Length: 110
Image (tube, rainbow, N blue to C red; front, side):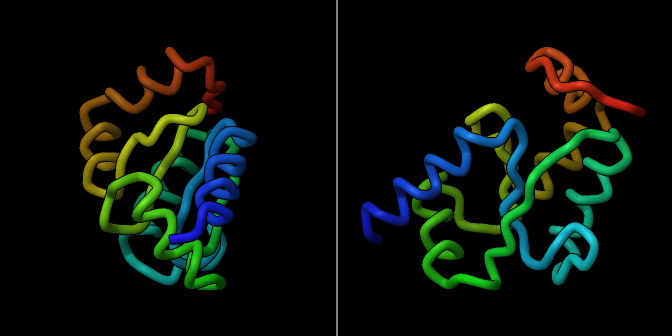
């Protein structure tokens, strides 16, 4: 994996409060797991940026190395890897995700 990709990923993660690496786009998710995370974020009413990993194989593979996490989607909040679909779903259902985002200073509209 090239250092350029890793540096680009670090810059993207660091320059967005909430960044979701996903398959597809928020308006047209192309995998069920990505769709679940989009639904959770939209329900909570948080603003976020999304990167469609299907558009670039280097990013798709590079983000797995970057996070040391084998699957997509991947959610980052304020530069910190939070998790994939199962973790986000569990955190949402328990109320932990709302608390986590609030502690990080993220405004929720729901």
